[in-house]
Length: 265
Image 1: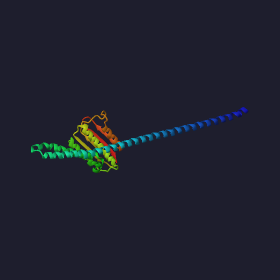
Image 2: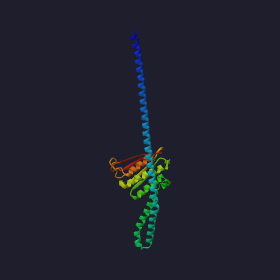
Image 3: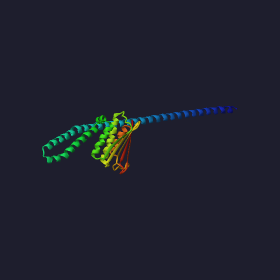
């Protein structure tokens, strides 16, 4: 009789002990899961912070490189305008003096040289303007592009045209205006060096929130998958990244090159 009274008490104690152990296990499991979640969140936050810091660092480096390049181009522009321009002017003046001192039959021989000097002087002065960002900003974005196209047209191209679509919108950040102009210059420079093109075209398509710039040449083109990524293409991409613009380059052998830049105002 006493044994029967003790058995229920033992079962109750075991049941309570089991419930207690389960509760402890659930609590410990919950704490482990909570700790793991907090750990993952902190780890992800640290990784995101590192990525943001790296991106900010890279953007700062790219911005510093751009500013250095702009200052270098400005110095070259001044050098061309002031020193080289003066030397060409002096040579042209001296040639004119010599021309007056020779016989008429010799004067004709001076004509081509004199004209070449004048064209060189005009070319140097025009080039010096496109290298100076302050002059570019003063002249204006579209006018600077037109000047660059006109300069290249005189050099080697049959046509080099600018077309504007939509209503022009001002750049909120004038530095972006310069950066986009340098991307255009880089494309044109590559066309001069490598394309063997005869015609160039640039379309500025002003939309409500975007400026879409399409640059084309009708040169020999290249295989986009196998071509070596040179400094020109890398410069254009890094500049586009700096202003959060999308750059898309397409080309096929014998089909020319097309570059589309999508910039958000």
